[in-house]
Length: 603
Ligand code: AMP
Image (tube, helix red, strand yellow):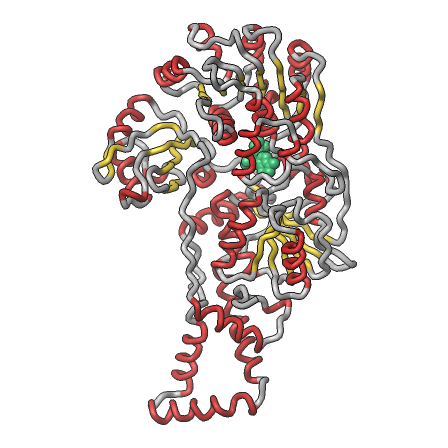
């Protein structure tokens, strides 16, 4: 969506108030282009053909309007979503759950192959207004009579081209024939092969077609780079870039208002001068923040697309797309915040393996290949910190005798009284000066070392971007590909740490510790990613396993959006502000000698 077009807000759309409230809770600021174009038609009950890929916000594009028409007083299936894989089915079910959090009595049931049939049957008996399933398993239930679609209001075919690729076309045809003729149909697909077109022609009535067109744009003054990172390492990657990459001012784009605040807080806690810019802030406050950026009392803005519209700050040397944009137009608009007034700019895009399609679309739209960026190593971070430290020392010497005379006397006294060599004394002072910002030893954490080696191997083998091709299975743990998220009923309240869960699960199942994925601890429960395809007996034995004397009661994760991870603790102490401010006032800033700077205490 172009930044000049005015998009109606979620609140202005005739969505159910409970749905609008949930959208506000999750922090979506404005509808994405596919949402803006699809929601009004779906609310009117029209059939829809959406050409959109993952990452465009298509799930909310159908979930929000369809949920608005769900009657929670009735328990029978009203919406059926067909998805190609169990992961997508779970993801879509989680999204429905999140958007329906203010709809008491609402139930969504994911059904997919490989999952315990008894659980699904119980779920169906209990009743669910929304079923999200893979075609094979939905067919099973329809044949058994355990799922009835007589009163279905809508069917969604999600990622239809993927379902075609996986050989589900006949199943889809059969399922569609079991649905009432009056139901609404929405079909989403990234591409439109002939067979999908045929399904659309047969089963959709007078559909509206929604396509996210990508305009071509050239951006000569901007160097574009891409950093392939998995979600969990983004903050680490960003911090390294901030430490090593010389920049003047930077804007970091994220998707939600909540994320602007969270990321600004995290960067501040790591000593960077960062502030959020989002649509929740008053105009006056936004102007104040932008003014601070222009006047160099602030270097980093964390913004949403809406908040950054029209932002024109000459010193903006870098744009970081922390979250990939929904479409190529948004990308072009975002990176246009740099390279202004004839200056050169740099745009860095963070992308995950799953977002490769969008990456290619962006390359096509900007008619530029986006080169891989080598993530700064811990060695680079160390070298940069030492270089900056040396620069600071040299600059202090340039201050001249008048400022240093008193210190010279103290140094002489120290050497005589304490019988110290000049080297020892200087080393002790250096240590004191750099205590809060030590020089890392330059070694990579084990995980990063492995990934770097693999990446280099792949680059060497193929002479091309390492991270874009097939990823070896070993990497999968990092981004949870090929894994299912489970919930266990123990959390921080029991005083556990992730190691306790890994130990218990690895001991009690045949799953080796290295195949256990990301773990998040909440107050009363935790989530854990485990390889897909777990058999029923393993799951039921894991339900019984006890940690701190409490059974895990493991179940497939359904996110109702109410759980929050603990905030990282701030590591700063009061003195740090002062030290840093003093140091800053003593040294003029140059592009080549940046360092994290703390927010000014009294600004
Ligand atoms: P999808 O294309 O449905 O897989 O969505 C991609 C991601 O965008 C998901 O993480 C959503 O939570 C997020 N998202 C969807 N709609 C919006 C919105 N209007 N504002 C911000 N984030 C959104």
